Image (cartoon, rainbow, N blue to C red):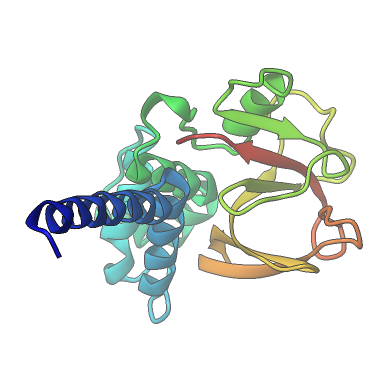
Amino acid sequence: MKKGHLITILLLSSIILAVIGYFIYLKYNSFKRKLIRIALNEASKWKSIKETSSQASSILLSYWESVGRNFSASQMQNESVQQNNPWSSAFISYLFHKAGAKDKFPYSSAHSGYFQYAKSKRNSKNASLRGFRISEYKPQIGDIVVYSRESGKGYDSIGHFPSHGEVVIEKTKNTIKAIGGNVSNKVKISTYSLDENGFLTQKEQSFFMVIQNNIK
């Protein structure tokens, strides 16, 4: 083989490997991949600790810091403080902050802070978050699913009301797995049903919204 041909082959091989490496980087380092890796890592921390245990205090303080609220470790270990300050939305905000969402996510200590924002952007194709009814959009990995904790409240309700959101981390033909905070007083992965067309059902919870996550 001539030297020139060998150099050409080596050069093309290098370019091909670089392209493959680039796409592997995008696959495993996209925002959604980071979001899920961080969420799973948080879930692993809660396998053997309780909400009011000393081991959980520093973790919870990090969640609250993402929404601009400051507590002490002793407050985190107080059951009354925990009951009056649910941290499930702070957990979601922490995930997005840690994954690098920056100003593309409306960090909030209440789920309504981000789902009402997403609903207002439903018709904005370039919005970072778009909130749809569960009958309008099929949940994808990296999206947020939201259910109501108050009877009679749902997609068309305005303002704040008791609710809960979780990040979708896995999807099959019939189910999704989603991760949420302050579920049974810990970070927990739950499984929810999809209907025959791939839309989220209300079989397990009173879901009313799927938030399309367009953050890159």
